[in-house]
Image (cartoon, rainbow, N blue to C red; front, side, top):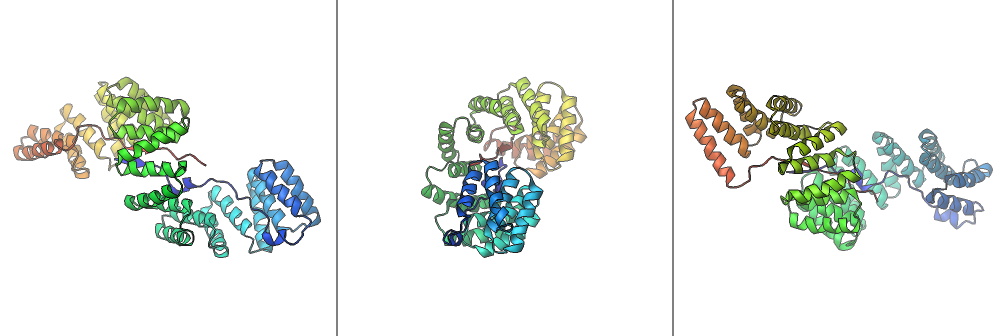
Length: 420
Protein backbone atom coordinates (compact mmCIF):
# COMPACT_ATOMS: atom_id res chain seq x y z
CA UNK A 1 0.00 0.00 0.00
CA UNK A 2 1.26 3.45 -0.86
CA UNK A 3 0.08 6.67 0.73
CA UNK A 4 0.90 10.01 -0.86
CA UNK A 5 0.83 13.07 1.35
CA UNK A 6 0.33 15.60 -1.39
CA UNK A 7 -2.71 17.83 -1.23
CA UNK A 8 -4.28 20.22 -3.68
CA UNK A 9 -2.72 23.27 -2.07
CA UNK A 10 0.70 22.15 -3.24
CA UNK A 11 -0.27 23.13 -6.76
CA UNK A 12 0.07 26.76 -5.81
CA UNK A 13 2.67 29.09 -4.40
CA UNK A 14 1.61 31.14 -1.41
CA UNK A 15 2.48 34.41 -3.12
CA UNK A 16 0.44 37.49 -3.76
CA UNK A 17 -0.53 38.35 -7.32
CA UNK A 18 1.16 41.44 -8.70
CA UNK A 19 -1.21 42.67 -11.38
CA UNK A 20 -0.45 45.22 -14.03
CA UNK A 21 -2.44 48.43 -14.18
CA UNK A 22 -5.79 48.10 -15.96
CA UNK A 23 -5.82 48.42 -19.74
CA UNK A 24 -8.37 51.24 -19.60
CA UNK A 25 -6.02 53.25 -17.42
CA UNK A 26 -3.10 52.54 -19.72
CA UNK A 27 -5.11 53.94 -22.61
CA UNK A 28 -6.18 57.06 -20.75
CA UNK A 29 -2.87 58.87 -20.87
CA UNK A 30 -2.62 58.82 -17.06
CA UNK A 31 0.54 60.62 -15.96
CA UNK A 32 1.03 58.16 -13.09
CA UNK A 33 1.09 55.16 -15.38
CA UNK A 34 4.88 55.10 -15.74
CA UNK A 35 5.45 55.14 -11.98
CA UNK A 36 2.89 52.40 -11.40
CA UNK A 37 4.43 50.25 -14.13
CA UNK A 38 7.89 50.83 -12.65
CA UNK A 39 6.53 49.83 -9.23
CA UNK A 40 5.15 46.57 -10.66
CA UNK A 41 8.55 45.78 -12.13
CA UNK A 42 10.31 46.68 -8.89
CA UNK A 43 8.04 44.33 -6.93
CA UNK A 44 8.67 41.54 -9.39
CA UNK A 45 12.41 42.19 -9.05
CA UNK A 46 12.13 42.12 -5.22
CA UNK A 47 13.18 45.78 -5.03
CA UNK A 48 10.60 46.62 -2.39
CA UNK A 49 12.06 49.95 -1.15
CA UNK A 50 12.10 51.24 -4.75
CA UNK A 51 8.51 50.07 -5.29
CA UNK A 52 7.38 51.73 -2.06
CA UNK A 53 9.03 55.01 -3.06
CA UNK A 54 7.28 55.01 -6.44
CA UNK A 55 3.89 54.15 -4.96
CA UNK A 56 4.15 56.80 -2.25
CA UNK A 57 4.89 59.39 -4.90
CA UNK A 58 1.63 58.46 -6.64
CA UNK A 59 -0.33 58.43 -3.38
CA UNK A 60 1.03 61.84 -2.38
CA UNK A 61 -0.93 63.32 -5.26
CA UNK A 62 -3.81 60.81 -5.31
CA UNK A 63 -4.30 59.35 -1.79
CA UNK A 64 -7.15 57.08 -2.89
CA UNK A 65 -5.56 55.70 -6.07
CA UNK A 66 -6.85 52.10 -6.06
CA UNK A 67 -4.02 50.62 -8.12
CA UNK A 68 -1.33 52.28 -6.03
CA UNK A 69 -2.98 51.16 -2.79
CA UNK A 70 -3.33 47.60 -4.10
CA UNK A 71 0.33 47.45 -5.09
CA UNK A 72 1.39 48.96 -1.77
CA UNK A 73 -0.60 46.20 -0.09
CA UNK A 74 1.45 43.67 -2.05
CA UNK A 75 4.64 45.35 -0.83
CA UNK A 76 3.45 45.22 2.78
CA UNK A 77 2.50 41.56 2.46
CA UNK A 78 5.93 40.70 1.06
CA UNK A 79 7.41 42.57 4.02
CA UNK A 80 5.35 40.30 6.31
CA UNK A 81 3.34 43.30 7.49
CA UNK A 82 0.11 41.41 7.03
CA UNK A 83 -2.24 43.62 9.04
CA UNK A 84 -1.22 46.70 7.03
CA UNK A 85 -1.57 44.78 3.78
CA UNK A 86 -5.07 43.63 4.69
CA UNK A 87 -6.14 47.18 5.56
CA UNK A 88 -4.86 48.43 2.20
CA UNK A 89 -6.65 45.72 0.20
CA UNK A 90 -9.91 46.30 2.08
CA UNK A 91 -9.57 50.03 1.56
CA UNK A 92 -9.33 49.44 -2.18
CA UNK A 93 -12.42 47.24 -2.21
CA UNK A 94 -14.40 49.74 -0.14
CA UNK A 95 -13.87 52.43 -2.76
CA UNK A 96 -13.55 50.18 -5.85
CA UNK A 97 -15.67 47.04 -5.33
CA UNK A 98 -14.82 45.69 -8.79
CA UNK A 99 -11.03 45.91 -8.38
CA UNK A 100 -10.04 42.38 -9.36
CA UNK A 101 -6.43 42.58 -8.19
CA UNK A 102 -7.43 43.60 -4.66
CA UNK A 103 -9.90 40.70 -4.50
CA UNK A 104 -7.25 38.19 -5.54
CA UNK A 105 -4.58 39.63 -3.26
CA UNK A 106 -6.80 39.87 -0.20
CA UNK A 107 -7.99 36.30 -0.69
CA UNK A 108 -4.40 35.08 -1.05
CA UNK A 109 -3.34 36.99 2.06
CA UNK A 110 -6.19 35.52 4.10
CA UNK A 111 -5.43 32.02 2.82
CA UNK A 112 -1.73 32.19 3.62
CA UNK A 113 -2.50 33.46 7.12
CA UNK A 114 -4.79 30.48 7.82
CA UNK A 115 -8.06 32.37 7.35
CA UNK A 116 -9.47 30.36 4.46
CA UNK A 117 -13.07 30.73 5.62
CA UNK A 118 -12.75 34.52 5.23
CA UNK A 119 -10.99 34.14 1.89
CA UNK A 120 -13.75 32.06 0.32
CA UNK A 121 -16.39 34.82 -0.16
CA UNK A 122 -13.68 37.16 -1.47
CA UNK A 123 -12.69 34.64 -4.13
CA UNK A 124 -16.33 33.94 -4.98
CA UNK A 125 -16.72 37.66 -5.69
CA UNK A 126 -13.57 37.61 -7.81
CA UNK A 127 -14.91 34.61 -9.71
CA UNK A 128 -18.10 36.53 -10.52
CA UNK A 129 -16.04 39.46 -11.79
CA UNK A 130 -13.80 37.29 -13.97
CA UNK A 131 -15.20 33.76 -14.38
CA UNK A 132 -12.65 32.90 -17.08
CA UNK A 133 -9.55 33.77 -15.05
CA UNK A 134 -7.62 30.54 -14.54
CA UNK A 135 -5.79 31.56 -11.36
CA UNK A 136 -9.05 32.58 -9.68
CA UNK A 137 -10.72 29.29 -10.57
CA UNK A 138 -7.73 27.33 -9.28
CA UNK A 139 -7.58 29.19 -5.99
CA UNK A 140 -11.33 28.93 -5.47
CA UNK A 141 -11.24 25.21 -6.21
CA UNK A 142 -8.35 24.88 -3.75
CA UNK A 143 -10.44 26.40 -0.96
CA UNK A 144 -13.38 24.12 -1.68
CA UNK A 145 -11.07 21.11 -1.77
CA UNK A 146 -9.56 22.12 1.58
CA UNK A 147 -13.12 22.02 2.94
CA UNK A 148 -13.53 18.57 1.35
CA UNK A 149 -16.24 19.99 -0.88
CA UNK A 150 -14.79 18.15 -3.85
CA UNK A 151 -18.00 18.29 -5.88
CA UNK A 152 -17.98 22.09 -5.87
CA UNK A 153 -14.25 22.19 -6.59
CA UNK A 154 -14.64 19.87 -9.59
CA UNK A 155 -17.60 21.86 -10.90
CA UNK A 156 -15.56 25.07 -10.92
CA UNK A 157 -12.58 23.39 -12.57
CA UNK A 158 -14.69 21.66 -15.20
CA UNK A 159 -16.32 24.97 -16.10
CA UNK A 160 -12.86 26.49 -16.37
CA UNK A 161 -11.69 23.63 -18.56
CA UNK A 162 -14.70 24.05 -20.82
CA UNK A 163 -13.64 27.67 -21.39
CA UNK A 164 -10.00 26.71 -21.91
CA UNK A 165 -9.53 23.00 -22.72
CA UNK A 166 -5.77 23.38 -23.01
CA UNK A 167 -5.17 24.83 -19.53
CA UNK A 168 -2.58 22.56 -17.94
CA UNK A 169 -2.88 23.86 -14.33
CA UNK A 170 -6.62 23.14 -14.43
CA UNK A 171 -5.99 19.61 -15.68
CA UNK A 172 -3.46 19.10 -12.87
CA UNK A 173 -5.94 20.36 -10.30
CA UNK A 174 -8.67 18.04 -11.57
CA UNK A 175 -6.21 15.14 -11.48
CA UNK A 176 -5.19 16.00 -7.93
CA UNK A 177 -8.80 16.01 -6.72
CA UNK A 178 -9.55 12.77 -8.56
CA UNK A 179 -6.55 11.13 -6.90
CA UNK A 180 -7.53 12.49 -3.48
CA UNK A 181 -11.01 10.97 -3.86
CA UNK A 182 -9.61 7.64 -5.05
CA UNK A 183 -10.53 7.96 -8.74
CA UNK A 184 -7.07 7.15 -10.06
CA UNK A 185 -8.21 6.29 -13.57
CA UNK A 186 -9.75 9.72 -14.04
CA UNK A 187 -6.67 11.36 -12.53
CA UNK A 188 -4.48 9.51 -14.99
CA UNK A 189 -6.65 10.52 -17.95
CA UNK A 190 -6.30 14.20 -17.00
CA UNK A 191 -2.55 13.83 -16.64
CA UNK A 192 -2.16 12.05 -19.97
CA UNK A 193 -3.82 15.06 -21.59
CA UNK A 194 -1.64 17.43 -19.56
CA UNK A 195 1.48 15.57 -20.74
CA UNK A 196 0.31 15.89 -24.34
CA UNK A 197 -0.03 19.64 -23.91
CA UNK A 198 3.12 20.15 -21.82
CA UNK A 199 5.45 17.19 -22.38
CA UNK A 200 8.43 18.95 -20.77
CA UNK A 201 6.64 20.20 -17.66
CA UNK A 202 8.35 18.82 -14.56
CA UNK A 203 5.23 19.51 -12.50
CA UNK A 204 3.06 17.44 -14.84
CA UNK A 205 5.65 14.66 -14.95
CA UNK A 206 5.80 14.58 -11.16
CA UNK A 207 2.03 14.31 -10.83
CA UNK A 208 2.03 11.58 -13.48
CA UNK A 209 4.74 9.69 -11.60
CA UNK A 210 2.91 9.97 -8.28
CA UNK A 211 -0.38 8.82 -9.80
CA UNK A 212 1.06 5.83 -11.65
CA UNK A 213 3.01 4.77 -8.58
CA UNK A 214 -0.13 5.02 -6.48
CA UNK A 215 -1.87 2.82 -9.07
CA UNK A 216 1.03 0.34 -8.77
CA UNK A 217 2.03 1.02 -12.39
CA UNK A 218 5.67 0.91 -11.39
CA UNK A 219 7.04 0.51 -14.89
CA UNK A 220 5.25 3.72 -15.92
CA UNK A 221 6.42 5.63 -12.86
CA UNK A 222 10.07 4.58 -13.03
CA UNK A 223 11.13 6.33 -16.29
CA UNK A 224 9.33 9.50 -15.19
CA UNK A 225 11.16 9.74 -11.88
CA UNK A 226 14.42 8.73 -13.54
CA UNK A 227 14.03 11.60 -15.99
CA UNK A 228 13.11 14.09 -13.27
CA UNK A 229 16.04 13.05 -11.11
CA UNK A 230 18.40 13.17 -14.09
CA UNK A 231 17.25 16.69 -14.99
CA UNK A 232 17.11 17.94 -11.38
CA UNK A 233 19.53 15.76 -9.38
CA UNK A 234 19.33 17.86 -6.22
CA UNK A 235 15.54 18.23 -6.10
CA UNK A 236 14.48 16.23 -3.00
CA UNK A 237 10.94 15.43 -4.15
CA UNK A 238 12.16 13.78 -7.35
CA UNK A 239 14.84 11.86 -5.50
CA UNK A 240 12.28 10.61 -3.01
CA UNK A 241 9.89 9.65 -5.79
CA UNK A 242 12.61 7.63 -7.50
CA UNK A 243 13.51 5.89 -4.24
CA UNK A 244 9.85 5.07 -3.58
CA UNK A 245 9.55 3.56 -7.05
CA UNK A 246 12.58 1.32 -6.47
CA UNK A 247 11.07 0.36 -3.12
CA UNK A 248 7.87 -0.73 -4.85
CA UNK A 249 9.97 -2.81 -7.24
CA UNK A 250 11.52 -4.56 -4.25
CA UNK A 251 14.96 -3.06 -4.91
CA UNK A 252 15.84 -2.24 -1.32
CA UNK A 253 19.58 -1.76 -1.85
CA UNK A 254 18.94 0.93 -4.46
CA UNK A 255 16.26 2.45 -2.22
CA UNK A 256 18.82 2.68 0.59
CA UNK A 257 21.41 4.30 -1.68
CA UNK A 258 18.96 6.93 -2.87
CA UNK A 259 17.54 7.61 0.58
CA UNK A 260 21.02 8.15 2.01
CA UNK A 261 21.38 10.89 -0.59
CA UNK A 262 17.95 12.23 0.32
CA UNK A 263 18.55 12.54 4.06
CA UNK A 264 21.84 14.30 3.30
CA UNK A 265 19.82 16.91 1.39
CA UNK A 266 16.86 16.96 3.81
CA UNK A 267 18.11 15.95 7.26
CA UNK A 268 15.05 17.45 8.98
CA UNK A 269 12.46 15.53 6.97
CA UNK A 270 11.00 12.64 9.00
CA UNK A 271 9.69 10.94 5.84
CA UNK A 272 13.24 10.51 4.59
CA UNK A 273 14.49 8.80 7.73
CA UNK A 274 11.33 6.68 7.78
CA UNK A 275 11.83 5.25 4.29
CA UNK A 276 15.56 4.82 4.89
CA UNK A 277 14.78 2.90 8.09
CA UNK A 278 12.24 0.72 6.29
CA UNK A 279 14.75 -0.13 3.53
CA UNK A 280 17.49 -0.93 6.03
CA UNK A 281 15.10 -3.07 8.06
CA UNK A 282 14.15 -5.06 4.96
CA UNK A 283 17.85 -5.76 4.40
CA UNK A 284 18.28 -6.99 7.99
CA UNK A 285 20.48 -4.01 8.86
CA UNK A 286 18.52 -3.77 12.05
CA UNK A 287 20.71 -1.49 14.17
CA UNK A 288 21.04 1.05 11.36
CA UNK A 289 17.30 0.84 10.70
CA UNK A 290 16.53 1.34 14.38
CA UNK A 291 18.66 4.51 14.47
CA UNK A 292 17.01 5.92 11.33
CA UNK A 293 13.51 5.26 12.68
CA UNK A 294 14.38 6.86 16.01
CA UNK A 295 15.62 9.90 14.10
CA UNK A 296 12.34 10.06 12.19
CA UNK A 297 10.28 9.89 15.39
CA UNK A 298 12.42 12.58 16.99
CA UNK A 299 11.36 14.88 14.16
CA UNK A 300 7.67 13.93 14.04
CA UNK A 301 5.41 11.54 15.94
CA UNK A 302 3.91 8.98 13.56
CA UNK A 303 2.24 5.63 14.24
CA UNK A 304 3.63 3.92 11.12
CA UNK A 305 7.16 4.92 12.07
CA UNK A 306 6.59 3.83 15.65
CA UNK A 307 5.34 0.47 14.40
CA UNK A 308 8.52 -0.13 12.41
CA UNK A 309 10.55 0.95 15.42
CA UNK A 310 8.76 -1.77 17.36
CA UNK A 311 9.67 -4.28 14.66
CA UNK A 312 13.35 -3.28 14.80
CA UNK A 313 13.27 -3.36 18.61
CA UNK A 314 11.88 -6.89 18.56
CA UNK A 315 14.49 -7.97 16.01
CA UNK A 316 17.20 -6.59 18.32
CA UNK A 317 15.96 -8.95 21.02
CA UNK A 318 14.14 -6.54 23.33
CA UNK A 319 10.67 -8.10 23.25
CA UNK A 320 9.36 -6.29 26.34
CA UNK A 321 10.22 -2.92 24.83
CA UNK A 322 8.72 -3.98 21.50
CA UNK A 323 5.46 -4.99 23.17
CA UNK A 324 5.29 -1.60 24.84
CA UNK A 325 5.80 0.15 21.51
CA UNK A 326 3.15 -1.94 19.76
CA UNK A 327 0.72 -1.23 22.60
CA UNK A 328 1.28 2.48 22.11
CA UNK A 329 0.62 2.16 18.39
CA UNK A 330 -2.68 0.28 18.73
CA UNK A 331 -3.83 2.68 21.44
CA UNK A 332 -3.26 5.69 19.17
CA UNK A 333 -4.30 3.84 15.99
CA UNK A 334 -6.81 1.09 16.81
CA UNK A 335 -7.16 0.42 13.06
CA UNK A 336 -3.45 -0.38 12.59
CA UNK A 337 -3.76 -4.03 11.55
CA UNK A 338 -0.01 -4.67 11.25
CA UNK A 339 0.62 -3.39 14.78
CA UNK A 340 -2.09 -5.67 16.18
CA UNK A 341 -0.49 -8.58 14.31
CA UNK A 342 2.97 -7.71 15.60
CA UNK A 343 1.70 -7.31 19.16
CA UNK A 344 -0.18 -10.62 18.97
CA UNK A 345 2.92 -12.35 17.61
CA UNK A 346 5.06 -10.94 20.41
CA UNK A 347 2.50 -12.10 22.99
CA UNK A 348 2.48 -15.59 21.45
CA UNK A 349 6.24 -15.82 21.52
CA UNK A 350 6.14 -14.72 25.16
CA UNK A 351 3.61 -17.46 25.95
CA UNK A 352 0.69 -15.08 26.59
CA UNK A 353 -1.78 -16.93 24.37
CA UNK A 354 -5.00 -15.32 25.56
CA UNK A 355 -3.64 -11.83 24.92
CA UNK A 356 -2.16 -13.00 21.63
CA UNK A 357 -5.56 -14.29 20.52
CA UNK A 358 -7.25 -10.95 21.17
CA UNK A 359 -4.69 -8.98 19.17
CA UNK A 360 -4.43 -11.42 16.27
CA UNK A 361 -8.20 -11.70 15.89
CA UNK A 362 -8.32 -7.89 15.71
CA UNK A 363 -5.60 -7.94 13.08
CA UNK A 364 -7.49 -10.46 10.94
CA UNK A 365 -10.74 -8.51 11.35
CA UNK A 366 -8.95 -5.36 10.14
CA UNK A 367 -7.05 -7.06 7.33
CA UNK A 368 -8.19 -10.53 6.31
CA UNK A 369 -5.29 -10.77 3.85
CA UNK A 370 -2.54 -10.34 6.42
CA UNK A 371 -0.54 -13.57 6.01
CA UNK A 372 1.34 -13.29 9.27
CA UNK A 373 -1.79 -12.56 11.32
CA UNK A 374 -3.61 -15.58 9.88
CA UNK A 375 -0.67 -17.92 10.43
CA UNK A 376 0.09 -16.67 13.93
CA UNK A 377 -3.57 -16.91 14.90
CA UNK A 378 -3.52 -20.52 13.70
CA UNK A 379 -0.58 -21.20 16.02
CA UNK A 380 -2.45 -19.60 18.92
CA UNK A 381 -5.61 -21.63 18.25
CA UNK A 382 -3.48 -24.79 18.13
CA UNK A 383 -1.91 -23.95 21.51
CA UNK A 384 -5.37 -23.34 22.95
CA UNK A 385 -6.59 -26.73 21.67
CA UNK A 386 -8.98 -25.31 19.05
CA UNK A 387 -7.93 -27.65 16.24
CA UNK A 388 -10.66 -26.84 13.68
CA UNK A 389 -10.09 -23.10 14.04
CA UNK A 390 -6.35 -23.62 13.74
CA UNK A 391 -6.75 -25.71 10.59
CA UNK A 392 -8.87 -23.02 8.94
CA UNK A 393 -6.31 -20.33 9.72
CA UNK A 394 -3.44 -22.43 8.36
CA UNK A 395 -5.39 -23.13 5.18
CA UNK A 396 -6.05 -19.43 4.79
CA UNK A 397 -2.37 -18.66 5.39
CA UNK A 398 -1.32 -21.20 2.74
CA UNK A 399 -3.71 -19.60 0.27
CA UNK A 400 -2.31 -16.12 1.00
CA UNK A 401 1.28 -17.36 0.80
CA UNK A 402 0.73 -18.36 -2.80
CA UNK A 403 -0.25 -14.78 -3.62
CA UNK A 404 2.16 -12.68 -1.65
CA UNK A 405 5.51 -12.57 0.07
CA UNK A 406 5.71 -12.64 3.84
CA UNK A 407 7.06 -9.17 4.56
CA UNK A 408 6.37 -6.11 6.68
CA UNK A 409 3.87 -3.73 5.22
CA UNK A 410 5.24 -0.24 4.91
CA UNK A 411 3.16 2.86 4.23
CA UNK A 412 5.10 5.12 1.88
CA UNK A 413 4.76 8.84 2.34
CA UNK A 414 5.88 10.96 -0.59
CA UNK A 415 7.07 14.42 0.27
CA UNK A 416 5.42 17.59 -1.00
CA UNK A 417 6.12 18.39 -4.65
CA UNK A 418 8.62 21.14 -5.43
CA UNK A 419 7.20 24.62 -5.70
CA UNK A 420 7.53 26.24 -9.11
